Length: 140
Image 1 (cartoon, rainbow, N blue to C red):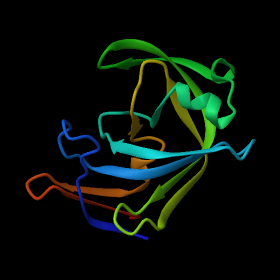
Image 2 (spheres, rainbow, N blue to C red; image 1 turned 180 degrees about the vertical axis):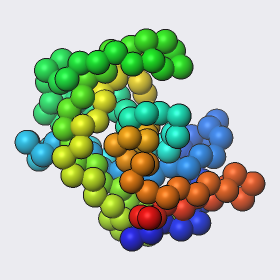
Image 3 (tube, rainbow, N blue to C red; image 1 turned 120 degrees about the horizontal axis):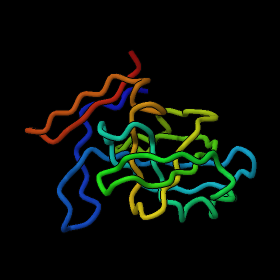
Image 4 (tube, helix red, strand yellow; image 1 turned 90 degrees about the vertical axis):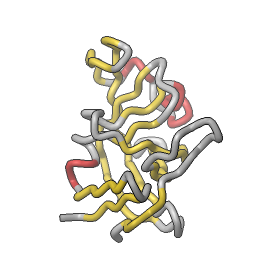
C-alpha cells in the first residue's frame, strides 16, 4: 500500500517536523515486539535502533553481529540482529509494508529509531517535499 502525501510529524514540541513513520519491530525468534516511530534518514546506511530496545525484543545485544560504523558522533559499535520491520501508514494506521527477516543495527547511545537506506529505503521510491512538509513511499 503506497504512503502518499503524508504530513511530516513533530514528536515533541521542540522538534522540527520530519518525515516519520510509525513502525513495529518484531523479533522473529521470540515474537516480542516494540512499537515506536522511525525518522526517515537518507544519510543512514542501515536502519538503526537504540540498544535499549534489544532486551525488550528478547535479543542479547552483544550476541549480535558486531561491526564498527561511522556516525555523526564518531565511530561506534553496532550489534545487528534479525528482525521483522513493519511500517504503518502515518495517517490511517494500517499496516503498509513488512520487511521480513532483515538485520537491523542496535546502537548504544542512540535515542531514536532511524529508518535507513540498505535495509529499508533502497526497496522503495521515496519522495520528500520539504516546502509542503509531506512525503510519499511506494514500491517501484
